[in-house]
Length: 211
Image (tube, rainbow, N blue to C red; front, side, top):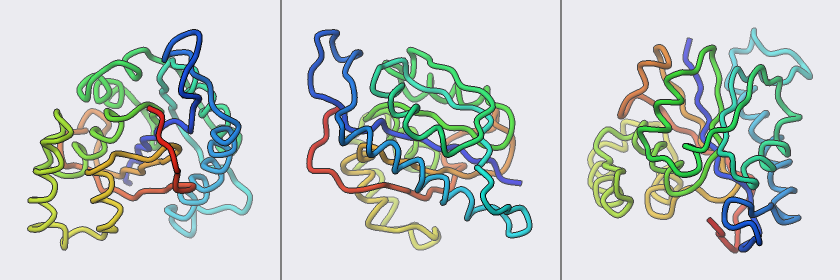
């Protein structure tokens, strides 16, 4: 059975806070986004289950949710959480300020079948690209764009992916309130470059993009 890692960028936040970037809260639109993302993500996860495993009205089970300790990610989590049956959740500063390897360190510690990570750009997008495309160097975002475009032109036809969405991810990163569903075979400790398949779920397009 495949495991599912969902990487989520927080919803739209106010551009400033008296408590600094870490204390920025969601806008009213951001709160709406987080709730609607919960509905669309829950539907997508239910659709991925085998028909015999589906039960009408059952919430998708999530074994772990790890989130940045920034206020905007906490509020995003509170908005989407009611649509899921969540066993464990915790916040971690490394999901606010850490690099790809720090996020992967957390992901490799998960147990169970399904886990969410709620974080920030550019790192949350770079992790998705790192796990999905073997030749996409995502340590620097500009490098990842060039590497991805070369890779996509040669290999993308072997993936059942939406070309426009994946190119957008490599060029601009995940939108606010966007969830990237990654699936892979193996154990959590096996997470490595290129092991995952990617599907993107998003609630809406945004006219602004505050960190």
